[in-house]
Image (tube, rainbow, N blue to C red; front, side, top):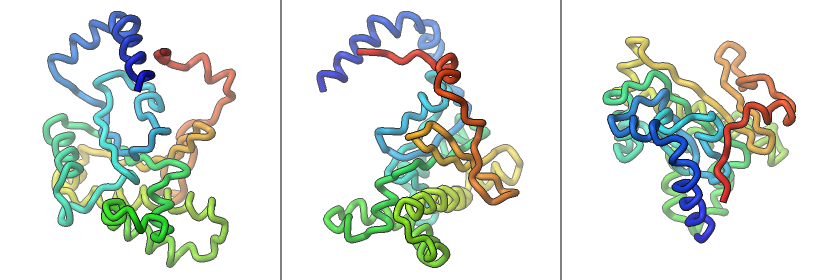
Length: 223
């Protein structure tokens, strides 16, 4: 906890002042570029990953980057999606999964989450993902490859769930909205984007060497 307090101290002393005008402008409202739906996993930082400034991403996070179908559950996820589209008028929604996802590992191993009833209940919204893996990926025996396939298929399943939300369906019908499926491999920094034409996840941008990447790095606060 002390590290977090020190981080706030550093932010107030060294960061906020340099960006004061930005924060003052945000008092008047927000106009985010996209709704970013991703996992709660602490290893994934949407703002850092996209180098977005405050006010540029409207973020929805939960275990497994899951979007319950509209008819099944109308909780926080549905409210966030509706607000992003109808009030903030976002034009893009990203569903971003990630490598080594614990939620997807739990989906593949129900016995491992037997003592986590809330997690087990939540993952029912990814039951379609589990069935796809069971029925179409039986030939994959390697555990790591199977988990990767699960992460990717789950992103596609959640995109389909998104389409059941009235605000999404309406915007899509008017061609006012674009949906994107991403998978972030945090150990390499590469983001894969689903390409409908090839039906594959392909690198969103060409990977670059760490030395070259450093010149594009946004400054991170230090404690």
